[in-house]
Length: 108
Image (tube, rainbow, N blue to C red; front, side):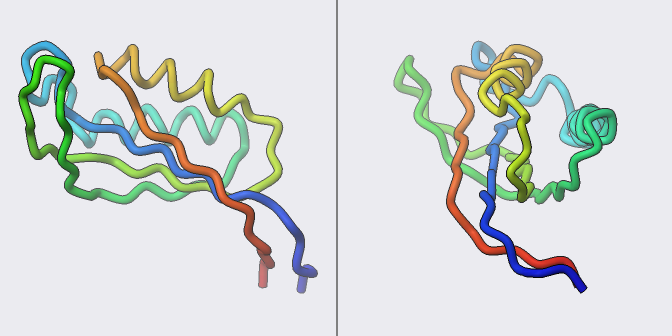
């Protein structure tokens, strides 16, 4: 058993709708595969959850869309902002939301 350690929990919320069309262009399943491959290459444990989110676009249009929440815990040296920006460009998003909070984690 491992001891409790201080680390961070990160969440990246990625909407599946395109910024211009407000419709889903790249499917959530395809995005899940891309995210899984990224984390596997970097050897980082992660989880992906399907959620529904609402978003007000800069043009004033409000939509409800399928959203993926990527969750991982660690003190990883991963440049989370760079990864999120890459996802945003790939999905043609106006923005993504990243949260980070301190947690104490233990592997059992």
